[in-house]
Image (cartoon, rainbow, N blue to C red; front, side):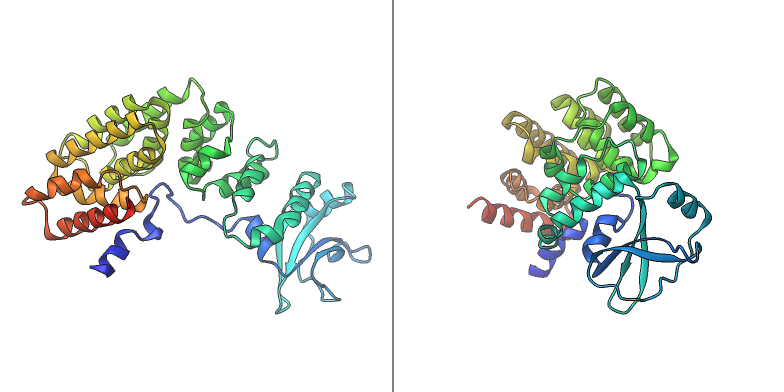
Length: 338
């Protein structure tokens, strides 16, 4: 049972919002690097790089193996203060990180200034706050870097950052296939934007996902819809995904997760609405009790424990595995409320 409890609350499954594996960002690479340099084309050979400035660590006379491509050579020749950021590890391996213009120099200075603090904590809150300011930057590379960074944060943290991205920017991105991997985070940001367009767009997204056979970005869309519509959003999601027996359990789980998240964050009234909705769902679909237990456990939310415990007296419609999941969550909820 102890082993099963561990799998019930595995951190790896704590969020169903992401449809891709988060990439290592430029900030990650900077923080991981032993040696960082800015390089420019050599005056003796414009096809070769030469170290212009050592930013961190020690770079002796190791030759840089990369050739300066035509586009980079042209940019460097017309921008005397630009450079190419390279890293060198302890084995003597060079890695190309980024072209650095004035905008990126400002970012680079800030990251290196904060590096000692950020290295001490995998996801330092100050890191997200500092980088979220680039979300509205005119340089798309900086915008995407900021998206990649905040795409990792728990929703509660995202709300407290107070980020604001123009609704027009978000809606354009949500309609572009090039930004497909950023759909979940863009939906969440749209829900936090206070834009009048957010509600209609999110309701449309949820209605479309109701017809889909897979959850896709439903978790993010449901979370954003509750953020915008509150109790009405919960009722709308319940009608579409929880009132019948036809919705795949993966889609049900995405909606329940969104409700579990907001149960942690919302008012007492919103929490009661969520609890009443999910109790009704479990009575209608007893096998769904395991899904509720799992999603609330992953959020470390024990509020629905007493309701599920009361329903355990008539658990004949649950499978043995489902009963075990619910029993473990109820036990966790009792321990968590002490």
